[in-house]
Image (cartoon, rainbow, N blue to C red; front, top):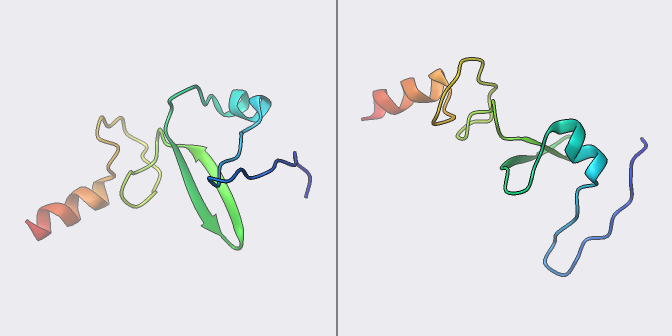
Length: 77
């Protein structure tokens, strides 16, 4: 595995390298999804991902909630 080594500060923060942010189109104040899978932390742009379950959203949606989560919310209401 290759990458860029960074230190974690006292508050648990790291700086995402600019070349990675540019490749992913992440700009200042953009939201990202941070997930833990198979012992690895992944960071990805939040756009196009359901804010509740993390599933990919293919249709345009202002609330960032997938159809499955909307259906579950309606069933529970």
